[in-house]
Length: 340
Image 1 (tube, rainbow, N blue to C red):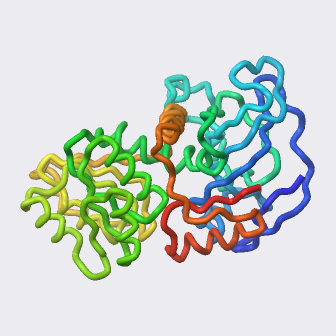
Image 2 (image 1 turned 120 degrees about the vertical axis):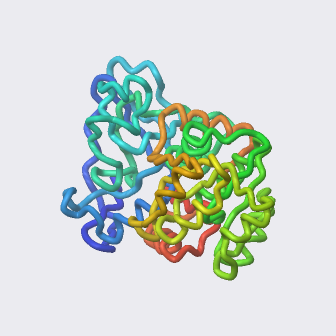
Image 3 (image 1 turned 180 degrees about the vertical axis):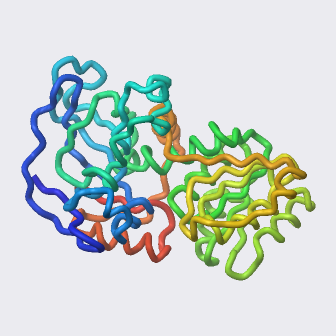
């Protein structure tokens, strides 16, 4: 079968490899149909974590496909079912996994496509518990956005920040895959959305998605605009995933008692902050990583109900590198999908 493997820093090759063995008890073989690209793929492409993994490595951390074979005792899915696949090999036995919180697994085997072989290959074998069925009216390309992009947003906004109708949320990088999803999910419950973008064209597209206010962070200090828009009160929730460049501005954008939820650090992993501001303003800060299987199912249900992903581009597998370079340059609006 084909596999897109990383052999070294920025060295991607589409090669022929042996297919996985037949699925064992409780396992399912899935024919991969679509892979969603994320910044974790860019980090791997650049050479992060080489010391922790064995190369060559099949890339791709987020995907959807169709069940091709099932092992003994599989009852959750059947041959032909369309499924989205969890992006990490979790143990299924620890307390967190038993409670459905796989993103807190105590014995995780690794993130697919980053630590262990990922989804950019014709077939992959997974435990049945890590598969979520796709509703009939959701395409493979859309479903490939559920395990990381939509699932991450669902977990951030509603499990952690507990965004409510009528509240105001600041969504950073509104043109990104998770930014576009956050705008649509927040608007769907009746929240007011302020978003930051890097150029005016992205601003127009963000408004078309439903953003109430758009700030070009290259020409304006977003925290100052946010304070003006909210009558100097600040927002209820900040959806943060940019990192060091926006961290303190994000805190200044919060109302007293506001919530900041963060899942990323694309602009840098370290920041300083005013601790007196933190406790005097009674901010609540949530770190959020990945999502649960329940979040993936919730995301797919939202897609079926009409809250669909924004797709920047749908590429062939041979153009995977081009997709990564689009993400790296930030010249995207929405998700980049690769078809297998």
